[in-house]
Length: 130
Image (cartoon, rainbow, N blue to C red):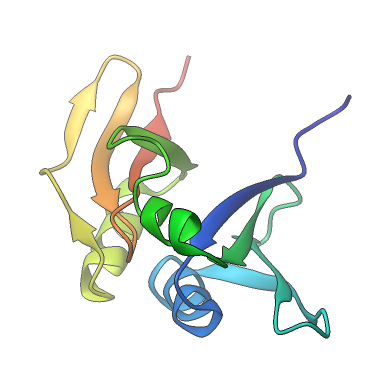
C-alpha cells in the first residue's frame, strides 16, 4: 500500500465543516458529491498537496453525534505540517482558530496545539530541519 488516502472525520454539519477547513485552515475542497440519500461525499485536504485528505462525514445517529469532537479521546489526533509556522499560526489566529497553548520550540520542531470547530485537537507543526 503506497499511502493512506482518506481519514474520516465525523462532523455535525457539512457546510460548517467545509467552511472551517477551507476558510480557517486554508484547505481545499477536493470533492463534494451528493449521494442521493441526504448524505454527501465531502473531501478536503491541505491546499496544494496530493497527500491524505479528510472525508467529512455527517453524523447519522446519536452514537456518531456523541463522537463529534472526541474521536481521539481528547488527545492530539491530527498533525498539520507547515513550512511557515509563524505565518500559518498568525493567519489561523486571524481566522479565529482557537490555540490551546502558545507556540513552543522543541527539538523536533515548532509546534502549537489547536482545536478544530468541534474540539478535535491538532498540532500545527513545522518539523526541525535535520
